[in-house]
Image (tube, rainbow, N blue to C red):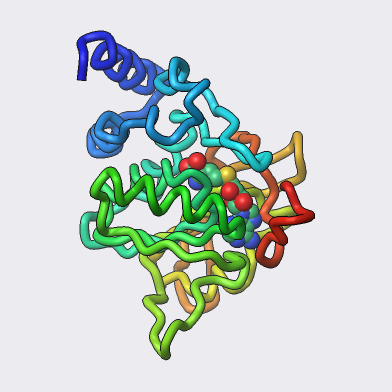
Length: 225
Ligand code: SAH
């Protein structure tokens, strides 16, 4: 890495600290994840700025501050099994891979998932399992096995009114789920904790702007969102 690139990374980490991120494991996971590998070539210059960027198919790579906030709020332990809904370009997932034991990630756009998987392979990140499916239904049983329930769940697309029930069902008791809830222009990042079989507590974290959580697998020919 040249000095200029190293400086950009350090500036972003300092920026995140100023904005209230204190978890050093999270800051170091962000520092170790080469964000320029996750953005289109023409956006590389902005890769280490604290901003969301378009990644094609109408989707975006989340703002580093939001990635950091979500990761920090989940209090991920190194033995945790994490489920992510909305792989996108794979950036959030790559950050989580440095904090958790394994990350299971679901994307409804086949092209995005394939690109993300290639990218993560190139970066030699091996503790990720990525599939194409409708994440609103939770992790599917494949060949009779299912890693659920998960210690932590992170949803990087916004649910309209409340998180899908299937995701609550796949959360361990004592586990946490972070998810943006609300319609475009009025979304709140919410942190749920499963207190018992039936009971959840919930806390507002930050107003955010995410693309909507959509049902079913995308029909690549007609559906560009
Ligand atoms: N985590 C990504 C951001 C993804 S943007 C990052 O780090 O950059 C949100 C993603 O959620 C989009 O790629 C969108 O296609 C996907 N998505 C929306 N609804 C979904 C669903 N039901 N299941 C799986 N993925 C979904």
